[in-house]
Image (tube, rainbow, N blue to C red; front, side, top):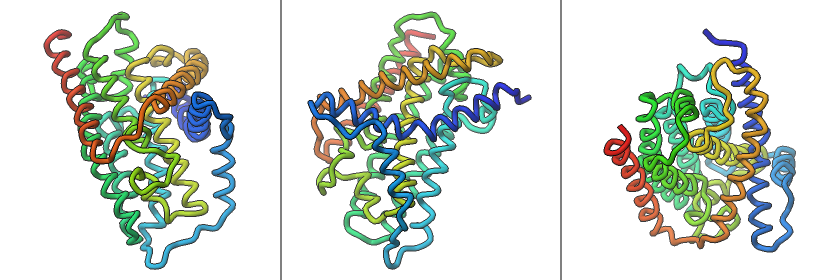
Length: 316
């Protein structure tokens, strides 16, 4: 039976993700500017950009099919659905019975397929190049992400994210080697999936570095706003997934309505620390060549597999 606290947690999580995701992107960019001894554009710059784009009329390329127009809405809907699945504030979510860790990876894959098809649909060289690179990154990142989620699922004996997070939150505090390897692998996958350094650089439009930006060059107006908002949501969802799996403390448990109030400031604090660490990683790292990305993601897959094997050998 769906409880009132579960519905409140679900709606709060979805509203928080949609409203705070651009702020997380602005925080990461601002921290990166501080670490590079620059002033930065400010925390609210992503909101100003979205507002400006929503006020503009989109310009559609000649020969673009309805898929090109539909893709921004599909991307935004997929990221909202992913945000509703991840237990960032509470584990008592109505979507628990409808989706699990495998469904979460499938939602990311669906969004990737649509943005890649839309980039190819226009027929430009940059769009096709970006789509090929995106599919290559996804082909290598999705297996590593699945192994990471399976490693955490082995501990709770369930692929439900809420069940896994609730189990991890009640475990005795200790160093678990399997989760350590899985955490490093998840960080590497998150950098690649969100087009961050060292795999991609979201701040440039250079041909040799573009993956995500190459696919959205033909979008403008509200379509581009939805695509950029979806990118911020994806970063938010990946951050919340990592925090839920590896730092689950502060997440409200089933039936704990009072804990939901305390979970909100705890999540904001963890996101602030995580955003700073992401900016630090990007500042200390150099952009690698695109042909080195398979090695990077291959290492992430091996670390994830090692984490699973260590669980079987040491933590049964």
